[in-house]
Image (cartoon, rainbow over all chains, first blue to last red):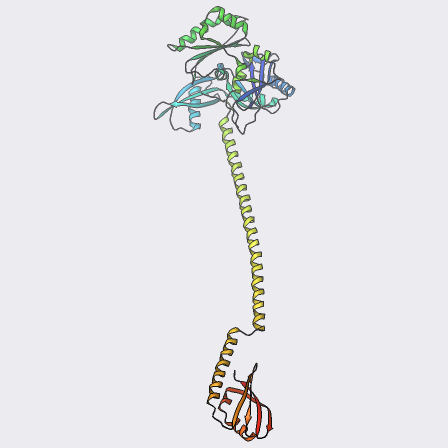
Length: 304
Length: 169
């Protein structure tokens, strides 16, 4: 989280995961990002269905109770969405178009593949590069607007000011050290695994899967890796970052899926400063649970 | 690196920038007004100080004029005085020139006293008749406005006389 002169310094980063709500509160002091609170809460039953929030009213009530309990009222907040419900792609567009025209073209492009063509979409895009004098390359993310609106209403009703809706794999990428070579990250938390391969500039491949039973995630890993290597083609992953509980780390090492010199443990405690109110032992053992929330607060926070 | 925010942040950004621009414009206007007011106040203060100085200077000048006027009233103008002195000098030169030409055997001037506004002539004559005749024909009488006989004393065989003549101005 980089400090903007006009922005509030203290932020809440929410990670709404199936059956669990995790949040951290962080603030900026010079170049350091200080984590003030790191909390994991079990959500009431019936909120989630197929990994997504279905009962926003229940979630809002639960969130309001927790926000009041932890004294987070009216703080700016950011959340992340699972990459599975966000379409992220690159698209070539004519150069010199207005923002509205670009948005309309992207919307039209995405809607072609949707079952209901007139479904409203929430889109964000950014110019990734110039392809020629007349064409630019645009990276975009699109998801169903209803979900975004419901989430915004839910969090606003709970007492926070939602400012950012990010994508979880982008949050994860922000935690990795910036390297010229291709690197990958395997994140396992709350019975969900995320595999993400990225270069310095972009996310090349990402995949998420859910454990059907404890330990199942490692069994599925070779299959997911095969998919990943197939998608990468000739490109080679130089570094693997693992962000998971120690038991999973042991299993991965035992399976010998990666060579030891290319394997590295993602240490969140080195990226952030913990305030005395956060239990260091708790945070280091459960760091994987807060990876997405921590990745979100590392983004540039703007005043709007 | 690509950063996404699926909330409609562009709308918020535009609104924020508009508000910021508006706020900055208002601040700039207020600042300009404050600076103008301050500059106006400073100039007004200086003008006021200068006007006080001017009033003081005018009072000094007025006082000087008054003093000059009083002095002029009290003392005649120097030029006039000089002219009068020069005139008196010329009159005296003429007087002495004429007196040196005087060739009357019956009259003899013994004393000539120059007073502030007049000249006192003292002398001897053979008789009052000679003295009267002399005064009637005295060409220097033209140089004087008024001639007053002060005393005539007969001391046999002569008559002593004294008269005052007021020179012309």
